[in-house]
Image 1 (cartoon, rainbow, N blue to C red):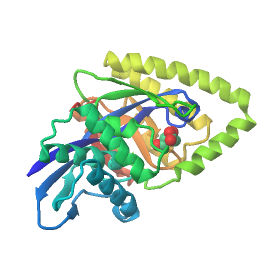
Image 2: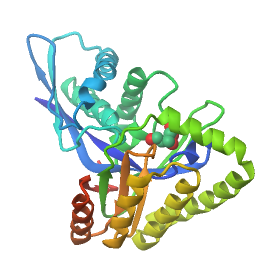
Image 3: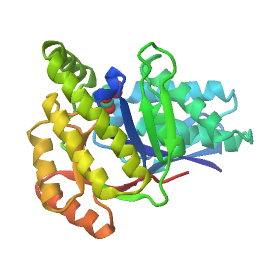
Length: 311
Ligand code: MEV
């Protein structure tokens, strides 16, 4: 039996702003997908990962393309069994597909005794992600967070070349709560709406972008110093800017308010917005529990996990 793992991911700063070439910060989650490879007499893929209802069915073809890409990259011709499990509940926005790719790449590397390093695993995961989502549609954020864990500073290359990705880490992982609004949004649509709003309000957006740049710069410094109070305030600032560009919604605001009232250091939407997930910074198990309970009382599902865990 040969095993490999891949972390989930969340965007801490910069969703939507990164579309325009501004920097973003993402992090691996402590929750992971574990892949096991076994010898078998036929090819089998067993997906035991917990899921948001309907996720695996919706992603069936994408998952198939990822598996085929990995089999091809590792020249797998013999029949094997691949089993996926772990405590990363698969749903949109937490890096599930990247965690699948890097965990299987790692397990195949062990199975074939190739001695690949993490950079090479990351490359294989990126290629599998591209096969799943379509060439040119993958930034590299997810597979990098998934393979290495820790934090990454990210800038999209608007000319189409490789994106800038710099890894950094903290001494101890920090507790967070993620809450699902239960609403799934099409990223393409929301990004399109923001684009239209920007075209109609260039001056206002220029001001918002300036404020965001400063927020993200300060956030990177504060994370490196593990100054979580400041990081929380900057998350709140980022949320305010996301409101201004029109990607928050009633459910997100309800979660943010209850988290802040319960003592969260910061709370903001993460990912596409107008639904999806809310990220709450809650250093310490006690605060994490308190904030998660407050949000659950409103009827939202939560995930208690950590940012910054390393491979
Ligand atoms: C979606 O997870 C993040 C967005 O910034 C879109 C993107 O960067 O591709 C909204």
